[in-house]
Image 1 (spheres, rainbow, N blue to C red):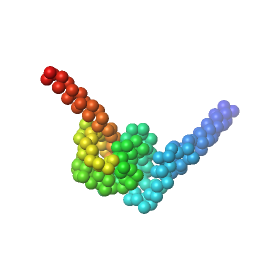
Image 2 (cartoon, rainbow, N blue to C red):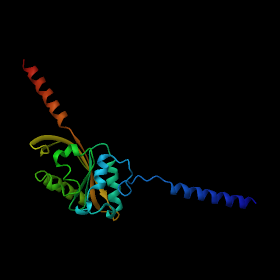
Image 3 (cartoon, helix red, strand yellow):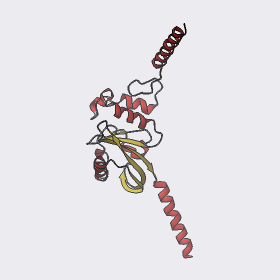
Image 4 (cartoon, rainbow, N blue to C red):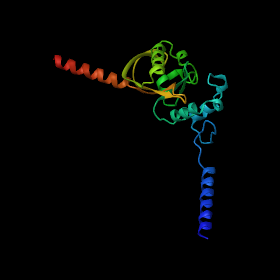
Length: 199
């Protein structure tokens, strides 16, 4: 009787586990988009990826889709550069970094959006594919066209390697912070203090 009860209890536990598995929530809105997507998420899902280098979302490697979901859920500017000829996937917060380059840059070769800046980042990504090391920089000065004019801007950024199933670098995950206002504010304060000392 005791063994029968144990067996019965085990079966009940397994059935409960299967039921929980069946009712497990899915947050992969790239494959199974719910009705309550944000406007940006809806735009990403509705984008005709079949006409872009990465192809339809359902054909993406699992790791790429997982990284894309992570980036899209990040409230701060974040981006993926995927592949040897890197293709960019960025989140909503990153649109404020690239300005008028959105929406044309999504899913494209980033050098088409920033041809003047890209040689620097291309060298960085090539080196990262060779050594897999995370690269960081603070208050990096860039002269950038993002709102129809040449702008002096400053950024903090971090590029982390995405390691594929074979152990090689298959892409980069980058986070970016626009520090332009802070740098200009510090510059003005330094100027005011220097003028005050000259009196």
